[in-house]
Amino acid sequence: MPVPDPTLLLRLSRAMQAHQAGDLDAAEVGYRQVLEGFPDQPDAWCNLAEVLRLRRRGTEALTAARRAVDLTPEAPLALRGLGLALADQGLMTEALIPLERAAALAPREPVVLSALADLHHRLDDDEAALSWHRAARACRPDHPLLRLNEAYGLLRLGCLDAAEVLL
Image (cartoon, rainbow, N blue to C red; front, side, top):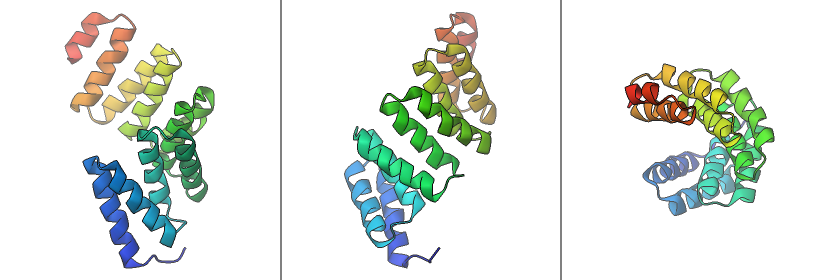
């Protein structure tokens, strides 16, 4: 893989900063600029897919996510992005495949495990969802959002007392 021009790396960094700040317009422009100069940059494809997904441009997000996985088939975050894009298109069963692969590759990555939990909720498999929520929280036991997610899973199963302990 050729080394990208340093200005492209700077653009990628700026696009990522915009993305983290919630400026999806600037993030999308930045990722697209990176891809114009370096079309095989997997992080730009992965992050562009997420931005497009957040902007509810599902078909474009799915295309970008597939490209990210084509470039880095063993990258857990790229696989997560593909799973989320598939789920957003209503392809729930298909979404399980990349998400489960991502979890196998990164069994201690809460963002991957939480995505699997969310998908299982969407599939009305609350017991599996709770299992994934617990796995995510085990990675970072004191993280407030992971505690809240596990409590939500418990509430969906009617375990009010157990959920209250987490809250």
